[in-house]
Amino acid sequence: MKSQKFFVYRHPEFHRRIEQDVQRYDKTDYDDIVAVIPYRSSKFPQEHDYNRRRPSEDWDYIRYDHSITQESFSGEVPDVVLDILEIATATFAADKAVSREIDIDEEKIDDSLLETRNIKLQIPVLSPELATEEVEQLYSEMVSHMTRDIVEYEFHHIESIESVEQVSTQSDIDAVGLLSDGLDSAAGIYHNKSEGIDAVHTTIDYGQGVKSKAENIAGQAGVDHRAYRVKSDRSREYTQFSRGLLHLSFAVSEALAVGTDEIHCFENGIMARFLILSDGWMTTRTVSPQFLAYFNGILSNVLEQPLKVENPFRDLTKTEITEKIPDKEIVKQTVSCPHSRWAKGKNCGLCIPCLVRNVGIIASSHEIAFDELSEYNALLEADFEEQSLDFDVSEEGLNPSASSPEVFFKGVAEIAFFCRRVLEDSPRQLASEYSELLDEPIFYQHHRFAENFVDALGKVASENPTVRTLLPDS
Image 1: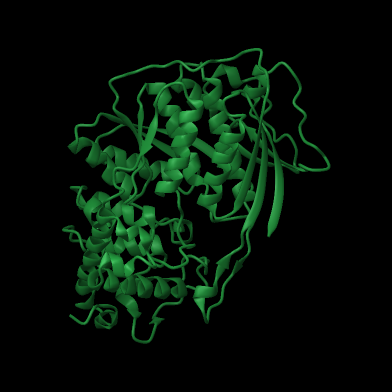
Image 2: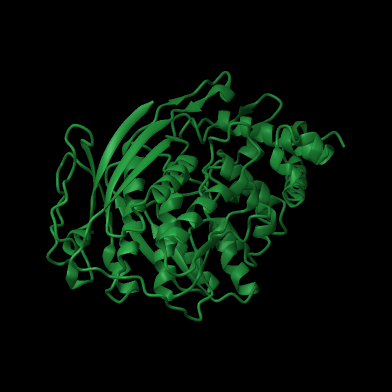
């Protein structure tokens, strides 16, 4: 197990507010540093005097544009917001800094595993509400659940000479909605519109072209959104499972700034719960019910005004949320793939999120050609009887543990097996393997997903008859 300990060197705004020197690190223990620093350019004069150079060449560092947060709060960012944002950005930087080994067994892909890492973060904070054992434990359990690692936090309260307190406000805004470039968050815009929810939309721009794609979706949907900038310039690890914490933390900032008590993160319940694959390591847990429960527990401990994160799509399938989008051109341009940088900015078509996305779209009423769904048209071009693909992706730079023919064939076979069982067996028959299916709404959600899956593969079979090997005999 890899083990690494980081001291978090805070943003200059933090140091401006405190009256004492913070011991940067214990050389015998926390000998690695994550530094949170400003962008090189800023709209706000408060940042003009900050040293924009990296504090040390040996440190891992992450930039975030504090000036955007200042603008949201008219220059008065509460201490707790500053802390929450920098806990999230430092976590993201540490997640990317510590590489994990991946043991891929091509002969028996079920035995492939992600190595568990042990990451410890020591972070000075301005808010005494954060520096408690309960909140440390909540953060540790939440991020460990999300990343499949052991992540531990130590928060140390530092007295300040200039404190910005929380101010309880209330506005006519009903919710903050998270907007990425994905299918689910695009559907979230239309969900809010249909429900009469007046929402502001927030995008976290951490690279990969998310901002420009989200801007296009927002423009076509006719909504405004604010994009927060984060950039980690040194990366050894690609999985970035902690990005969900990044998204929700900035959404908290936006919600407190506009004075609403609700945050919407949109993820269809099949991917949020992810009961399908036996190992499940090929997807994230960024919107799992357990993750949201942890995060809401933190908010109730540290905020003075009520604020809650909800997933309005937790009981829907991918097909059902796709139907919320009226324009198929918006559906086509969404990117739900976490590996798009290896697929020319498109959905790769080989990973599990792409498989669930493509099945959801094919089963919907949107008539989109199969070859427009993703960079690789694996459903159309695979020979499911021979377990082979006509195209070679070995030289394309794709990640063999998450977006490869081996992952694709394993995923589609196991999902097909799961769907067959859900369609044929009762919840009690499935309970020993999938205890959550004893919950009637969750069972029927997965039953609908199974119907969507069979429907989609039935359509694919008209052009690729070998896919029939995955369908129930009936």
